[in-house]
Image (cartoon, helix red, strand yellow):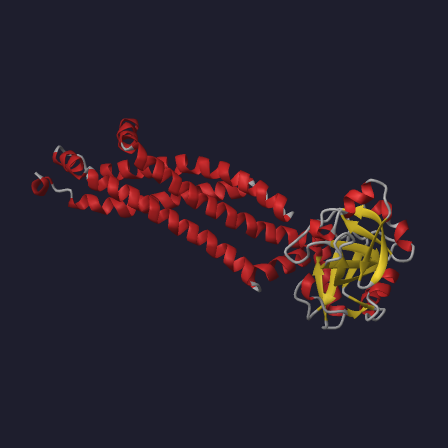
Length: 384
């Protein structure tokens, strides 16, 4: 096998301009696949960070709810009814809704996601929440997500400097008493946490007792899956009972299958694969056409079609590996730019790096397999 590799390498490097164009084309295809997969995974991850942060074993939502941005309220009596089961340790209601936040500097309004909780118990595993719960007991006080987009104003910077930060939320003056970290998502550019009492002051059209999420903590040793099944049989059918992981999957599946965004990112990945296949095919087809007489000579002296196919596939493998490297490097730069511009979790993962590498190799092998069909016409009797 080793004696065949120099032939593949020499053919690739004979036309350095052509090689550079081929590598640029493969890198472009890789960048396109990396970006589409990166945005898709950022979409999924950012929209389930809230779900992952919930301190609960089982989650109750209205059966008509589709996702956090399309929640339907239900009576908290359903949640407290779960306390009748001996497997349940405690229950905790959460209100959530979107409202308008007015930038205190520019005065421009922007939608923000607001959570209302009982400040007696922490239900979020988020930095900044536990130490600020007591402050939420004061009227018209909120916690602001320091990872919100800059369009909300320099809230975190002003607060860290020791300044009193106030803003207008739903035409009500509120005070920022602390910061926490959750992060922007495709569904919300910013987040607030406040007490359930303050929440109902802000959303004066909401009825007390109509909650959006119910959290259930189970007694130690109770299996969440078995407990969820028991709760499904015990509670009315208008309540959707989910384990915490099922709640995460519920949100992820919504963005993957019920919105156009997940489909668009997947389609973009497929298009990148197709574009790369076409580019590599053109390069390898031209390579085969330019050396058709040499291939015919090899056939005449006894080399088989399988050997020639091996040479072409070796060229395809070399192109895949060489083109992948600049594609990966440039993608890292673009990920950093996108992350700073959108505050979305656009990061390179090991799984994605391996996935795109495998796709690149498959892409080049498919191109090589198609291009090698030209070798069938490499008949020494016709060429010479």
